[in-house]
Length: 114
Length: 113
Image (cartoon, rainbow over all chains, first blue to last red; front, top):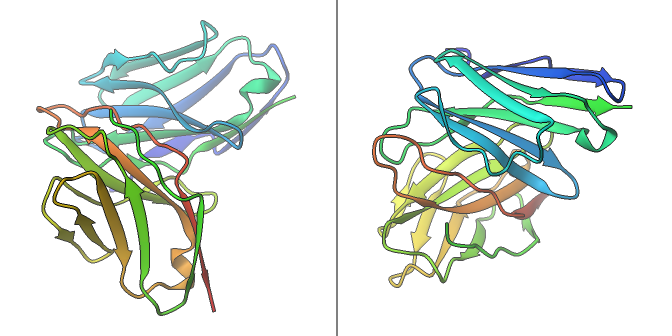
């Protein structure tokens, strides 16, 4: 298995533009997590899904952020409109979801909003 | 989830054991202790987890105190490639689907020659 695949690896966009980050979890995993990492705030959990259903989105910073998981093999994190303070590395992780199993992380998407 | 406390940084000589402590004094009976690490510019990587017994795998050993209020991650023979930020996480027992995985600030381990 290729692991968790995120795209793009790097994204530079202008303030006000819409940004969509993509994640393909490991096949067979039924839990998916989106994280954001910055120097100031560290690794923050934004939202996580179990069986394609959002379970906890309390970490989503504001209405500009939205996440979807239309099927078990794909998820998106959208920011609209983007702002410079959204600049960060965004990680996606997936987990088998069985009892006490570990989460596997992708390589992340480095987003820069100018 | 219970809060964890870790030292912000530690140094270790290559070839020596690295012992990384974690305090989780408010841990509850259904919470596990997980350890992850993050090497620069990569996504976090799972290391090990445990409930109350000591655990060992090919990467590390996890020692949990009898009262479960603290634990120590041991890298038996640290190498330069073990330089990373190590996160101790307390996570609720899952019941068929994944539970929340919340990262703190971690310990930055620097392995030196």
